[in-house]
Image 1 (cartoon, helix red, strand yellow):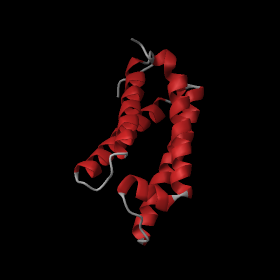
Image 2 (tube, rainbow, N blue to C red; image 1 turned 60 degrees about the vertical axis):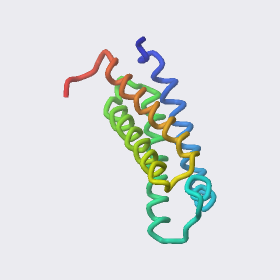
Image 3 (cartoon, rainbow, N blue to C red; image 1 turned 90 degrees about the vertical axis):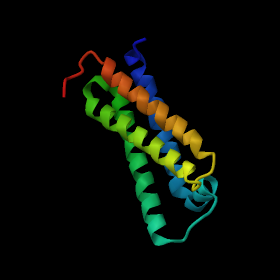
Image 4 (cartoon, rainbow, N blue to C red; image 1 turned 135 degrees about the vertical axis):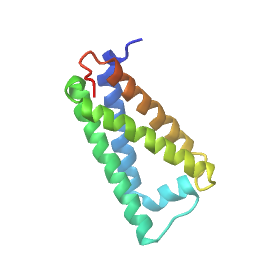
Length: 132
């Protein structure tokens, strides 16, 4: 099944979910940390990395919105997005397996992992795919 024809829809959904997720994590950091990790934090480094991570998620959501307009012209963003989503899924899975995150992060693992694979499948099936 060639999923390239669904690329605009896939990237529109990913953009919306990234932007909403990032904004909610940025606006309500303590709630987010409690929900995902079972505790809040006042540590400045936790705050620094939390805000930076979610700003990157927000930027990637904006990138996915750009890709949704013209996937064929944004293959670099598709590649970076796919790899980034797989790394995020692996990171959350690691945190969960270490007992540092609550089961709700598995929803993030499923979301990021599945969209990461979709992005790479779109890139692989793209008729204008270049050999790197």
